[in-house]
Length: 279
Image (cartoon, rainbow, N blue to C red; front, side, top):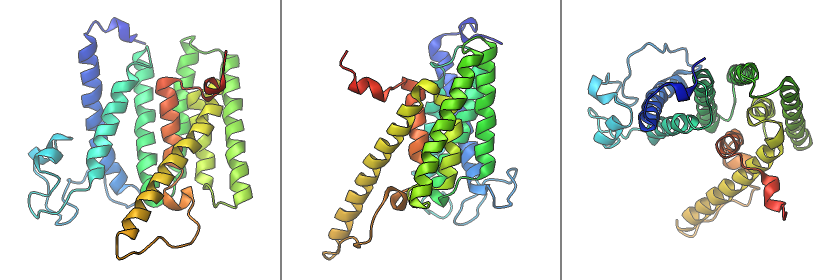
């Protein structure tokens, strides 16, 4: 193990390396997300999704190439999805922020792995409304590895680890209850399974905050999306949204809200209960 404080490098250099490495990983995650469950090899050459022209080396720089090309293919002029830029930027920012929440290089590497998997889950669920079990399993194993390392370093006790597992299981039971009573209309079963590793990640004391904040974020974003759609449709020849019931699940999948909630808590230690404390 190598504590970050013993690397003897300036903080700005460490943060820069973390961000730079993050955007590079984000570029790889874009390829992985696009080719996941398609049978395509990850070793294939990157190409334009519209004209299939292989990309030149200078078109493969994370973030910079997207900006330099003005979000368009150099060969055919078709627009490059903004998702590629956002995934690279988000991964870079997450990797940068993670430096401030761990003290050991091994912890940092494990946390980076967890963050990369969370990015994949978020984007994949957003586009396909499904969370592959393989990703949930990989996340669970990675989080368990992080907790095992923290236990070895003495950062958490064995009793604390067992408490984290019990609290995470409690979170799963809550989401399972919602899935059962709604018959899958409110959340998917993949969300139920995802609750366990995310509950482990935030810890026993903040599982309640993780659940509540996920619904707060979901409600806020869903209402925003519904409002934008309403105004957009109303501006088209007086058309309005259909009168069918709109739910958070019909607007966007729920897993991104759960991931966003867990990340907010991971980086800020936000506790919902403190909002109602008058002490």
